[in-house]
Image 1 (cartoon, helix red, strand yellow):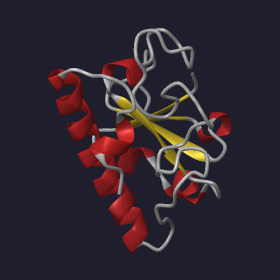
Image 2: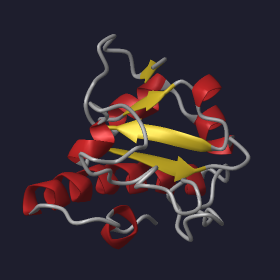
Image 3: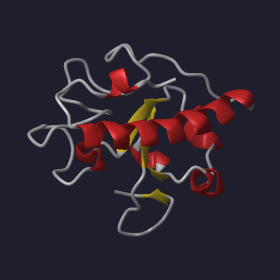
Length: 135
């Protein structure tokens, strides 16, 4: 399970904490379904020490990114506490996901071709509107 304390490594606002709580509730529920199906189990990324993917000493990486973060795009939903990268070293979760499952949980993801070893989930639709999108 991903906790809000895993998500925030930097100062954040109450609004951002609410956004992250809602996001993580959906992501955790979807991951719980995958656990029940026997295809996924949370494990800790050795670089972050949590189920959130990232690099050792990273600048928010797969969790919350402050406006000054050097990681990712300047308009990334990570900066609004609306995206998270779940550690998935064997890509089993990514392989199991379908657009129907994403829609059931109100989530979008970056296409698995772009996320080897993790799954990028976000609450806001990309410009394409597709549940699985290429950045």
